[in-house]
Length: 187
Image (tube, rainbow, N blue to C red; front, top):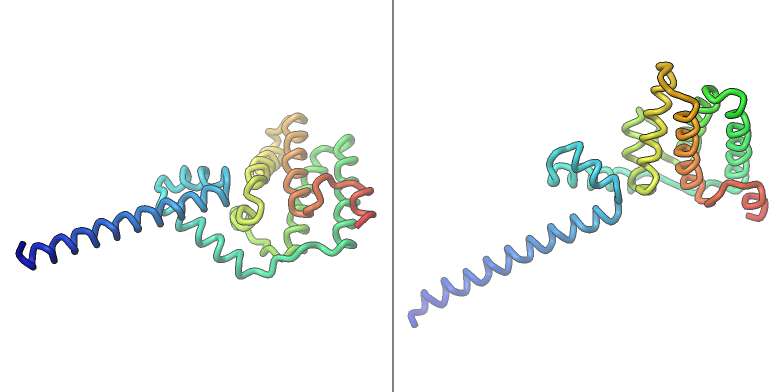
C-alpha cells in the first residue's frame, strides 16, 4: 500500500477517536450536571429550551457559588434560627399571611448567615440550587405561593403548602434534618 493511504487511515482513526472522546466528555459532563442539580437540571433545560445553553448556565452557577464563602452555621446561630422557625410555625395558626412573610424573610436571613449573596429571588434560587438541588424546587414553589398571597390569591391550604416548602429548604440550609430543640441542644 502507498504510504499516503496509511497516513489517511491514521488521520481517519485519529478523527474518529477524537470525536468519540468529545462525545464521551460531553455526555459525562451532562450526566454530572444532571446528577448534581437533580430536578433543577430539567427545569433549567426547559427554561432555556436548549441543553447546551442550560448546561452553560448551570456550570456558571456552580463556578460562581464555588467562589463564595459558604459556611455552616455556628451552633448558636442554628439554635437561634430553629427557635425563630418554631415561633413562625406557631404563628401560622393565628396569622398564616404573616407567618409566610416571616418564613420567606427567615430563609433570606439563613442564606445570608451562611454566606450566600441575597439579591433578587432568581439569583438566590440559582445560588442555592448548587448546594441544595433537591429543595430549590420547594423554594420556587413557596415563593410563588408567597406572591399569590401578596396578591390576595392564596388559600389557607396554599399557605400551608408554602410553609411545608419553606421548612424543607430551611432544614436543608441548617443542615440539621428536622429542626427541633433536642437536635440543636445536643450539638
